[in-house]
Image 1 (cartoon, rainbow, N blue to C red):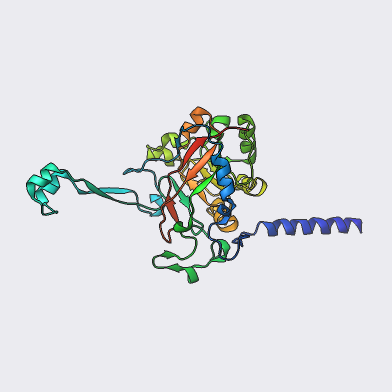
Image 2: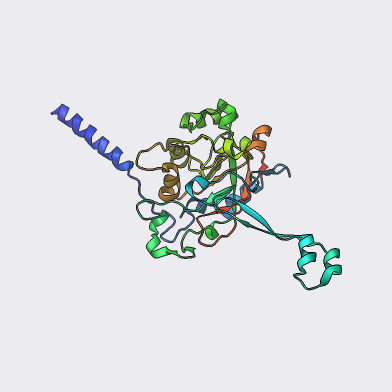
Length: 324
């Protein structure tokens, strides 16, 4: 009888564990109309608290340049970055588009330009509609009801508020050395790095993972080749154990490839966006923070309000704070 009880308990435990692994979109604790997930953690008080700790005016730019030939998701069929001139000083003289004649156009030079790009290029934030599960996105919104020809009616990039919070750099590349090709950063890697940096995480933090790949950003082939990324286990630790608000990294797509699960080619993406309502930033520049050993800072960023879009370019900055 005792053996049967042990077997039954083991079976129930296994079933429960399997049930916990089922991937399904999350229902927001902030209500049925929530479109920004864990960014709801931000309050006027939390923003003022971190801003009041800024120790100097030194500013770290955490974004990369946009240029023709920059790293992108072109292998998935998405367009690369394109730039072209719409007006040049000489062309204005020849074409006289303003009708003011040679004398005026020779005196006042005129340059204009335009760009075309995928919204998930360079330093950018993924909105909660970027990836979903089983026909739904975060909070149960469906494309049948909320996706029109001009974008999503829910969780579009225009809903993303300016972000202010305590930023923490987890400099994995510095702590454990050059990461192997396609390496998946583990919980132990994060814990080891935090201990070495003498840094602790707190609920509501914005965590930035340095893999070292940003060193090669201007060489697309090298940057895109076999890049390391964070594992699903490590992301779950950050979200469920540490209660972070936002995560970012300096690689192309946060997680590493090939996928670590057989039935989901982007398990980290769907876990964060669809299951937990956690947005994230990709292709960041974290080298200067690493060089100066800045692990805690005020993080300030805002993205373009691209209505209905699944992502948007972002220009984050970090300002060192007084450590406690």
